Every structure is written in C-alpha cells, then in structure tokens.
Image (cartoon, rainbow over all chains, first blue to last red; front, side):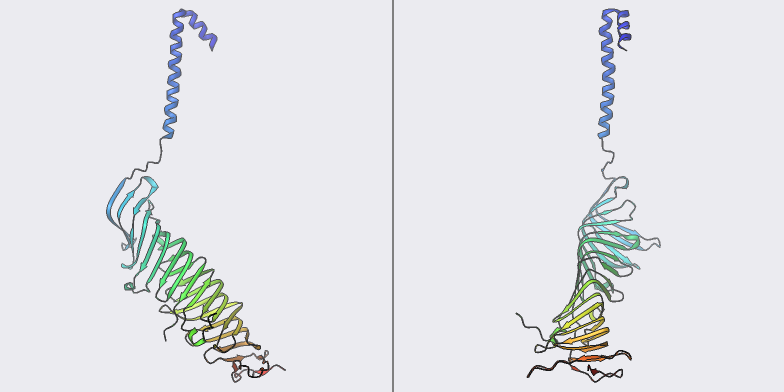
Length: 199
Length: 168
C-alpha cells in the first residue's frame, strides 16, 4: 500500500505529496468522526422514560368483561411511561367492587399498573379495609408492598402483615388472598389471638 | 411468680396461637393452622401438628387438634395438680370447657393415669370420663394419696361400653 502511494507521489511531484497527505488526513478524520458518532449514539438511552401521559387528581375505573365495575383507582398524580413501562401512581386509593357493591378500600404510598392492566403493585405502606357496611365480616389488613392480579381478584405480599377482625388479630410474614373465596393463606411465622366467647 | 390463674378465669382469657402457616376462610369461619402449633388460653396449653379453629361471628368456639401425639395441659383449679392429656386427636370446646381425647388417649393428673380409646375431661367439674373398646379396656392407675393430699379428678361412672376397672 505504501509503495503504491510512493509511485503516485512521484507522478504528481513534491507538491502533490503534501496534497496527498492532506487527503489521507481528511479520509482518516471522516472515518474517525463517523466511528465517534456511532459510539456516542450507542450511549443514547434506548428506553425513553418521558411520560406519554400525566394526570393530576385523576380517577380511573376498570370494568370487567360483563361490563360491571371491577375497581376504581384515584390519586393526586399519575404518569404513564412509554411502551411496556406501565403507569406510576402517587398515593393511590383503590376501591374494589363485588357484584357492583363496594367492598375493599385500599390505600398505598405509591403504585404501579402494568401497561396491559394485568398487574397492580401497591408499594410501600399498604392499608386494605373491608368496612362492616359491606355486609361481610369487617377486616383490616396492614402490610407493605402488595401485588394484585385484578382479573383473578387475587393478591399477595411477602412482608409482615397484620389482619384485624372483630374476633381477633392474626399476624404473618407473607400472605396470599383470594377475594372471591374470602380466603387468605398466611405463609410463615403465624400468630393469632382470638377473643374468648362472650358469656 | 404470678400464681397460676384458677381455671374458671381461663376461659375468659383470649386464645393465643402460634404456627408455621395458616389458612383463614371468612365464608366458613374456619381457620386451619399447621406446623408446630401451640395454643394457649390462661393455664391451658395445647400443642399439635394441625389445629382447626371454628369461630362464629369471629368468636372462638371450638378447635380440633391433630398430632402424634397432640398434647393438652391445664390447671383445673389453683389448689389442684395440672392435668395432662395426649392423643392422636383432641377436641376442645371453648363454650363448654370439655376436652375430648380420642385414639391412644391418655390423661394424667398427679400420678394417676387414665388411658383408653376415648377420654373426656370436663374442665369445669374436673371430671374424667374414659371409654374403652370391646378389645381394649380403659386402664386406670390410681396412686395412693399421701395423708391429707388433695384428691385428683374423680373418675366418672363407667360408660355404657367396657366398664372402667382399676388395673390389677
């Protein structure tokens, strides 16, 4: 490669040598700049988190296939992120419904809803209450970080949880709850206290 | 140390449970506790592998305990010896205060021992009713009382089944 360049230089004389050097330098720089830009572009984050939708003091409702209300979700602020990143919610308040009647009222510090609404995560402190007015036994569940699957009316948590009911208190580490069956599994370190029957 | 609470107050105490895991069903009022289950109520203490608690309107009504064996102990009265029971199954009613031990049942109070297929212990009256099977008599071992010692739970009249006869 170098011998060929030398013959070209001889042909166009000394002055040409400088010109040839310049051409080489330019070609090299262009290659270098293209490579640099390519590298920089790689650094550019693919996953843009700029919200595609924000809402303040919002209220949303989810219907089920039969057209009945499944749950409502309200809160001071939400942000939907692009693609599959889902929706982030501040201080969500969720109301679940059974046969169109309100049942559970759930509060959390923050929340996240999957892009396809299949999963809801209630994050940090969580308080779920079923008041006596619902006609079912009143219950109060306090815990942290709960994962809900609305379609199956199912929820689970892996942390300490306390369940207060009129007859007593139960605590556990880890639980799973099936709302339709009114059934809750306490997964470990279970403590229970029952009030004695009143005479 | 705090004197052991006499029995009548036991049943006014809250029932406390400890277990490895549990399943609570609000529709049926049944709670199943499993794994190293310990239930206490005043001086009463019950242990089992699996304990099923039945509640009514959230109130503790009765429980069934299963184990190999499941054990039970309680102090009938401040001046009475503790009563120990064991069996493969124990049924305890919070409302009547009666404990029924079935299958390999054994009740011990002081040095007196009752064994049989089914032993019922009435915590209120401090009475033991033991029942055998045709080929398995009730066994009762009554130790002589030291002078002035307190009498143990009096064995009730033998049931219609095999009569309760002291061991020869």
